[in-house]
Image (cartoon, rainbow, N blue to C red; front, side, top):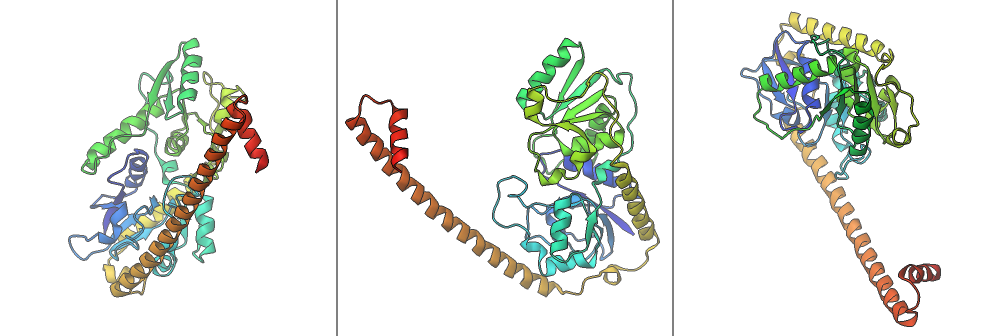
Length: 377
């Protein structure tokens, strides 16, 4: 059996490579690197099955689904990008690719281990058997200890005002501060060796910190696995990607932190909660059993495929989903155009009223004139 590793090759966020690093440690070897956004294009050197642990955030390129037949998947840590609910800009296209053949693929290889409750609930609503598995980054092994252990605190991608307050607070305690970001320049040509080194260097830094303060999910979860005390400061409480991880972490909101309405001793940080450990152990067992089964597997790709649709049927399904989704997109755009024109007209009418008020009542301030106009409306 050959083994593949999912990569987001053009990522801005090293968190994707942290997930790949956590995945790679379970594999006997990595024979293929598979681009997360082009899994349908994957072709092994021979027409052979390739076992793949499918922990990832799907799908930004929604037309490249389902994956190629040669991929024999284990779905854990599955999350899909519904941009609006993830509080990110995006098109009105959400989970259309999970209906029809796209959903049949997941049904065939279920149950699907999901990274968050929202994805689990959405899949179940579509008739796809699923459960909360947690994220594979919770299984990361401990990194080597260094002579610097406990001598610094890491601030990872905090809001500027939070980072400034933290730096001032820790300077008063004469504590070394390491300011870190998970962002980097896009480089789709970066080798796995370079990606892996970036990850191990970063995780070693976290391993030896007195504590880590962050708003990043794929900083916080690896710190749980490393048993490095971690504190999350994040404002948006309804971010679907963080449910139920909020309950696994010591945390506060940005607002409460700035008002000193929190309880956490950065110099003597408490141990992390144990809530995640149940899911960590279940993930390790589940993935290890999958890999052990694949080691014993001698059948070819055609015999291991669990779906029944043909390549031609995939093309028809993809065409229909694209057509339906693009029509939805155009309808949404037209509606926005109508709303925009209405708002422009409303603004122009209000501007005219302000100009008239300026001539009729020059003694009033602009604020008083606007209040007077609003009262009429």
